[in-house]
Every structure is written in structure tokens, then in C-alpha cells.
Length: 488
Image 1 (cartoon, helix red, strand yellow):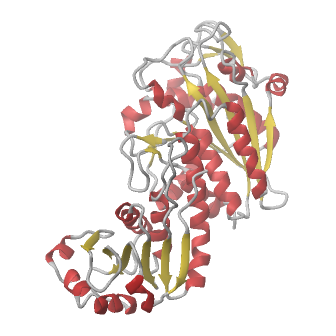
Image 2 (spheres, one colour; image 1 turned 45 degrees about the vertical axis):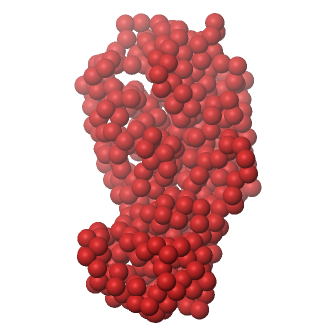
Image 3 (cartoon, helix red, strand yellow; image 1 turned 135 degrees about the vertical axis):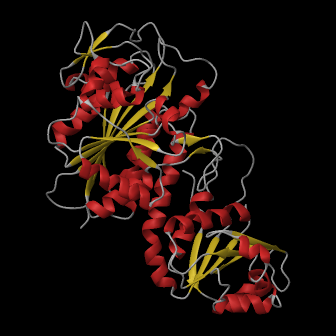
């Protein structure tokens, strides 16, 4: 796993500022008022900080912006970064400011003078998140990650405030590592082994093998993986933070590689299908965060791990498969495989755990990217209150999410001549019909959310908080949803 940058929280030591290497960052409000540590920096730089915050460039900065001063006089640091943040600023702006500092520092140490700023924890988390660097398959000796030092007026209080933020960041790093991993490394077996390691955090982990899945009747899931040499699996992870309460269920699509099967994808861009297990990666990351901060909630996470390959044994277009629920599905397109994996895992989760609510995540449709781009995940739900709770959590963590419609009329597109339903409904409303398919496997009375994260799980250009590649989108939102709704 990619380790978090070393994080050192200490009481403000003004005398140590002159010798701090790399980047020294100071938080200053728009008005340019300097706190105690900032005044010390200003003295060391012979008034350079004060001149900077009185400059025209400072006036043009937006909230969370950073003004750089290279090779400042009086400091060992090669860069003095002046961060514009008001005393009461939104957490999203503070995280982005921290991320800008991480990009600025590169491989250099960073010393942040937080003093008593109320958003210091968010700034530090942003710096941690943007410091991610996936190097598992690069040769040569990597330089040790440089430390991030945060000086605060009350280090002990800030350390306690930061603990859940650091747990979240660790969960995001796990999700990114899983999604970034190539498919010859992250097989269904090695994926299950990585999830089993969460036992060290107190998570109960079971791995259901193919014979057990066959006995349970998970035939739609097994059909997806029957053309692969990698065995299909379902991994069940339970975090029991409260006694005698039904859990919240998180369900993840874990297609470790998706060729499209017999309905083979075009060659261009197929290498990106290593990320088709993004839903399972996000679920794993959320469980990592929940367990690391010892959440006072019951959460069960289930992921279906398969590989969709063309082979003499692979399922064919026109095949009819029987789900665990008992419904029959005509497979029109073997590249619409994620819903076949999810429907069995969702049904199993409800049969075994009777959850208080269920959230499934999947890189399910290209259509959601056409509709929402890479800024928002598609959100589908049968329960307004449950959905609103997630949307509020996503907004608080600044993870883009947009609610999409469901409706009985879309079911007509899924009608089959030979089975209970088809697995695709054609090009119109492709993301909606995919969600409509999954809704058939939600029991009456079970609040449910489907998150189509095809556009947000991995991006070529990076985001404010992540470099190019896997983003870990959804880990923070799900963790926040658990914190706000299931731990009171």
C-alpha cells in the first residue's frame, strides 16, 4: 500500500522556523492580518511577508489561493508559501489549499504554520491526499516521502481533530492503489487477499469461493467470470462497532479486468479497464477508513470479484441465466456485466444481513460520463431521505454527486421475449436502465442507492486532490455518511 506522507503535529516553535527546509507555509486572511508565528516569519524575512500581503498579487488571490516567495531572505526554506484563508472558511477550500501546498512542495518537506486556524485539519488532509504517488511498478530507489509538519497553538487538540481525517486519507490511498493496480497483479485472488488483511484492523472478513457461490445460486455473477482462468469470489467484510443493530450495507462491483467478453470492446482504451473494479476499491477504502477510526456503527461491505474474458467457456449473447433471486436474465451484451455481478451480491446482502440501507457502487456505464462528465457520479435511489443523507455527505466532502431519475417507464426497455428481463435496454437512457435493472433486486422496504462512478473513479488529468489516475472518489463521502447518520 502507498504510505501516507509522514505527518508531524507539534506546538508552534517560532525559533525553529529559520532552519525549516523545503517549503514553509503561512495562513493569512484576506485583510493581511499576521498572527504570532506569521509575525515571526515576517521579522525573519525582514518584512518580506508583510510586503507580500500588501501587494497587488495578494489582492488578486481567491480564497484558498497560494502566493509563492522564492528563496526568502532569513529562511533556510527555498519557498515561503502564503495561503489566503479566512478564519472561518469552508472545508473544501481549506482542503484544496492544502493540496496546492502539496503540489508546490513536490518531494520537499513542508512546514505549515496553522496556529489556531479552525480549518487546519482540512488543510493538512488536503496536503496528505495530494501527496499520493503510485510507484509500485517503477524501478529504482524511490526517495522517502518528505514529512509534513504542522505547527499549531494546541498540537494535542489538532492531533485529535486530525485522526479521522488521517483515517479517511488512508482509505482513499487504499482505494487508489487498488484501482491503479494492473490486472495481472490485482487478480481476483490477490484482491481478496488484500481485503483479508483488514482483519488486522478488526474487520471480520470472509471469502466465498465458487463452490459456495454455486450453492447459493449466484449464477449471474458466476456467468460473468466463467470465461476466465481467475476464480470468481465474493468477499464479505463486517465492521461491528455497535451491538445488536442491523448494518448499513456497501456493495462494490469488482471486475478486475473487463474485455467486454464475447461482446469484445474496441482495442483503443481497453487498457483502462483495469479500473473496472472501482466500486469494489471504493468500498474497500471506505471500510479501511471506518475501521481505522473505530466507527461506532455496524457496516457490512460485500464485493463481487470477477474477470470478464472471451473464451470457449465464456457466456454468449443470447444466453439466459438465473439470478440468486430466481429471476431470469437474457444476456444481450456480455459487456453489460457489472449489473450481473451486483444483482446477486445485492440479493445475498439483503437475504443474509437485512440491512437498514444499501449502497452499491460501480463503474457501470459509459453513458453516465456522457451525461455528467468526470465532475459528478450518478446517484439513483428509491428513498428520498436516504438519498439526501448521502448527497449531504458528498457535498460536505466536496465529492461531486448528482441525482438521476428512475421510473417504471424505463422498465419497458428491459423487456425480454424469452426471459424475465434483458441485461441492457439499448442506447437511450443507458445509465438509467442499468439502475432500473438493479432496482429489481432491491427488496420492498430496503432504502437503496446506486452510484455510477464510471466518470469519477479514475481521471486522466487528475483532480484538485489527486494526481492523474485513480481518485478514491466516494471513500470520504461514504465515511461521512456513516459518521453523520449511523454513529449517534
